[in-house]
Length: 163
Image (cartoon, rainbow, N blue to C red; front, side, top):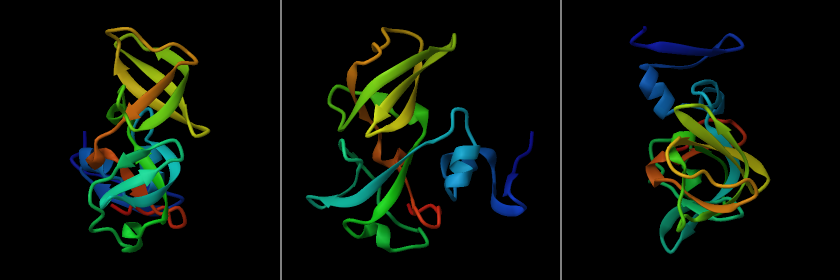
């Protein structure tokens, strides 16, 4: 196993770094979708300031977002900026008090874990769960939660990471 990896797309270098760092903080949407199985969930959204807190509105609820800093563009901090939201399947959770509404469309049993496939504002989203406990039923409406530091923002035009 390598201590550093390079991700190429059509002959262009996308990102270089330790595998875990590339997985945790992809530089763009290509890397976010290429690394990981299942890949990072991505949904269009709008960056908003809600009572002074940074959030991203998905049309069916709002996830909190950690401070937008160090990105190549300052505009993600502007209320109303269009973004692409990314969240890894293991960083989403069914949470009765979660801020985002979803509908369960499928449950895939994989032995040691299960994937819960949900519809969020017309987009498929996958959650990774341990196999223990009761799985939600297909058609069940659920609420999803994610920690703000696990919510990634990407520019919809350049596909580059913003936060």
